Image (cartoon, rainbow, N blue to C red; front, side):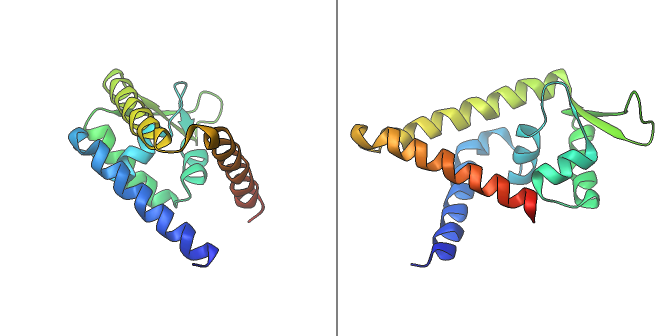
Length: 140
């Protein structure tokens, strides 16, 4: 299998796992990814769209649904009134915690399937790969 094919299959499998392990939250995968990407002190819409790799119009549609469900709120940036900052509501923070707990839980389940003697190496390789992907995103 070529590396690109492996990455594609890995992405598909991870998305399926996310959906399976978070279906009790009654959220779509894009909503879960969005909620888990909002820091506790909020984030401006442009930075959030870059973080998620989606355009502003797609982000706006996703955010509007989460605002309607009272998971997030939108406010004008304190120093740049043209910029909108998205932050979690109290209900959104509880949901964010549930998402993170579920991700940690199934991540631990997966990690426990790796032989103990390989766990440190796998973790190091994944961390290095994440760094490479992050740098690639910044340069492209």
